[in-house]
Image (cartoon, rainbow, N blue to C red; front, side, top):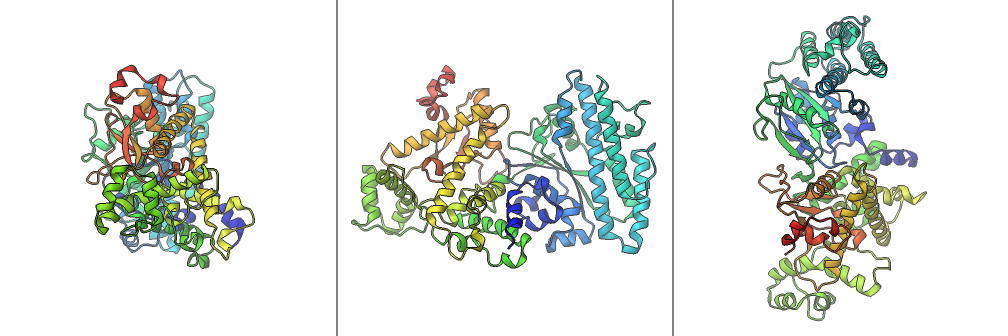
Length: 592
């Protein structure tokens, strides 16, 4: 394998910057993805790096039609699902927020103009893909000429003539540039009248121009009446509440488009619309929460490992197909995960684990362990306490300063990714790219367990440090998560152990706006996860009296177990930290 190719592949782990071929060949479809392939409206939720952009790109026809899957191949052949991907580009979203002279209506008109233009630009890629999929080669050039000219006349009637889609794309680029130039020379919003004839069509009703484009495409290529036309709008967290209201209006009403919107959890800013009636989940749209995908997060640990192995194998196969069959996390990391290996049904009285239980367990737990049947002992004691006892023993013997092997093995590796593709690849980088010429994929031996553990701890520390760089809230967010993790560390190491493990928080009913804002951003970055029910996995809990699990990948930095735990009151966890003085006095009863 070419190491530079490997290096480039694993350093670029954001779907926004990947080619169509790379996204398609490295994509691992989850249950959440399949739920989107229909005519319903969806709002896709997921922490940063969870794969929202990849999922929405895969719904676009230029990606969808290239994916090797029998179900998708049948939909493509039947011309049943035609999607268009449109990113909410930070550059033009930012320009809307940097014009204080805009009124709300001015801002919305400018937003509508730019979004209409962006949808049409994205639709050109859909048209190209449909021509490639459904038109014989000898006819394609003539059909492309016809549709390019018809689209140009509909979208930019006063623009120059074009005879192919590349020329049409250039015309739209020129329209956008002209708008930017005019905006720089004026203190009024973009208005397309006599002074701006080329882009006037994009002032029409939102999504009107792309709907017109669909009608024109149907004249050139036959599609069945029940074909689904999907519009995937990515990263809506960048938008304002007023922008969400405008888009929500189209989820409420009858539309020829099936909307697939993505945003971070708790960043679907409002359910209001521009009418008197709000949209409702389960009626006008469905939430799909990627971070709680049942095919990964809600399976046993083997499910996590299989997912991680599949993601990395496809990455390797993209660089060199022949190496894909050779790669596996087991070959790289071994079979053992000391903290999560299968536990025995009983511990002999003089066994090392029983001695650790007697040393670190509280009296009630020790007495209960000695009277349980082997089956009950495995379920209630060894399964729950094995990893905790190993961590306590290491800290007791070494003071936490010696290197160890506890954070190693495929199961640990998968769990510390939190089922987040980007974090999985970042953790993989700790084992590969940062080790210089020692490329582990070409190594003849397993990666040493001590090195694995060091990488997991280093990765965990970097995660917390990265939170400090978050614009506008980084300092407070870093302090907030650090306070919580120090509390869980103290609780774990300063008390005798029971079968209960604490690694979650519960918010008070009257949580302040400041603390809720920190929680929202922590969930958006994947530093904590709302406890969603098994019956309603996509419903996020409200701000008051809700529970949140800490991210598994934070655990190694603090010598903790990357495992779900019981919750503690949020304010109780913060009361000993630096944030305690900022807590509102009305919360003090919650600490009791």
